[in-house]
Length: 142
Image (spheres, one colour):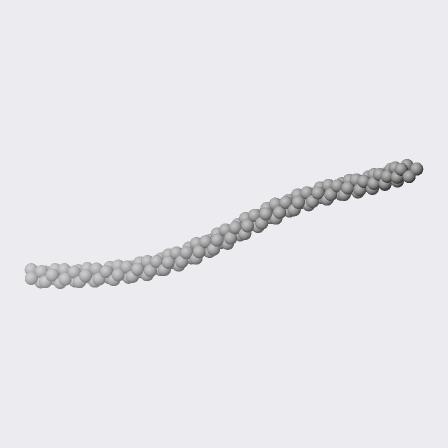
């Protein structure tokens, strides 16, 4: 009787232990599923983070390109300003040369005028001398 009671008690203990193992197995399965879900979410988050990092790098590269383009445009603008300044300086120099040449031309014209006047005076003197010689020759021959 006592051994039958011990067997029944042992069987009850095995059954109780079996139920506990079953319950723990179910909890373990639920935790495994939850862990797998968390792993999937973690991988998705990592993928999103990688994509955001790539997008950020692309935006930074675009910004650097834009900054380089802006710097290049500023440099071209400065160079154009320098060329314009140099062209203005050359134009001013050309105007000065033109004015100097005009003044020299006017001075030459004045000297030509003076030379022509001197030549006219010399011709007049020569004509006067020739007239005097002719008059003298006529008087001598008379």
